[in-house]
Image (cartoon, rainbow, N blue to C red; front, side, top):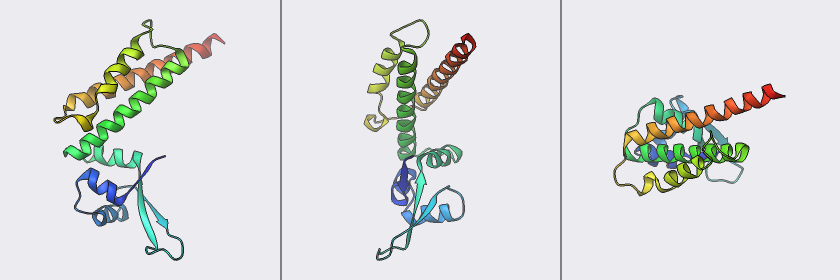
Length: 149
């Protein structure tokens, strides 16, 4: 699981500083962990936020600032790529079209939000739906495979 420091969360979400993030963790707005430092360190503890918690916070609070949307979209693209590769490794292809995953991967690989000047909210919807379809297809194939045995 990937974790982010309060400074990184502040820059992603557009907060003034890491202290603002720490307060949100302390009051439960953002789910995070407090890590106790070792003896001799300048700080006795620090806070971290799991990737999944940060995604839930951004989506739940509808942070429509560019940095949060860009980060969220890049995470969704990475998740979608992982699901596609998993589908390809498990089944070789999705559906009856053997080139489908390769075609989708070639499109997804050039769509990086950090290189775009303007972000289209429709992109997030498309990736979410494609991801759901890929996941559904994999589950259906597993069910079919289990009923044949």
